[in-house]
Amino acid sequence: MKLAVVLSTNRTETNWNAFRLANLALSKGDKVTVFLTGEGVEYEQVSSPQFNIKEQVGKFLQSDKAKIVACGTCMAIRKQGSSKECPEGGIENLYKLVADSDKVITF
Image 1 (cartoon, rainbow, N blue to C red):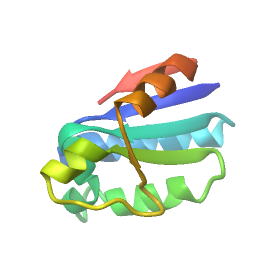
Image 2: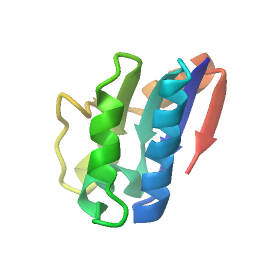
Image 3: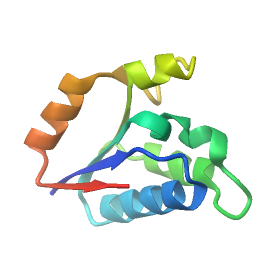
Image 4: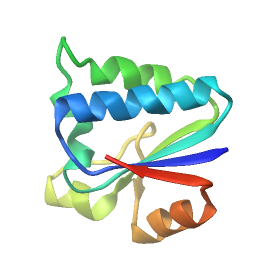
């Protein structure tokens, strides 16, 4: 199954749960893409000892069936740059992701 996870919040526990679900889906053999939009592009900045998002993201990115894409406009608004692990995308990427996925879940 192709799973799309759209993350649009910077709430620590919510982001942690989104990546935990993404990791579970990978462990079941699914292909998972996380698209970050709005406050979701701040996901790395809100990690905490209780909700270690960086750990979940690190585990997620170890899979060749995992991908993260961030809205370039949302990143620019927050003065953030893209990276190899989290490249910049746009609304066209989000549309294609939704159209090509078997399931889409939003957080």
